[in-house]
Length: 72
Image (cartoon, rainbow, N blue to C red):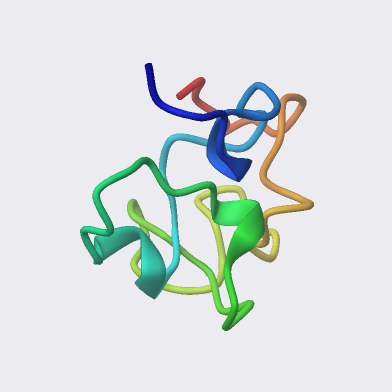
């Protein structure tokens, strides 16, 4: 059985549509966006740093309570 990684240490609590460039690199294990080295995020819906609700996109902000939030 695989060791517990940073990506499995806690439940994912950010939006399904939140993206960062590291998300698209296959490292052989799931990637947790909270571990992004760049800190640059965008929304898959708008393809910008502004979400569909007009608010900034960031791993600390794209959470339950926003009108555009979707569970991973």
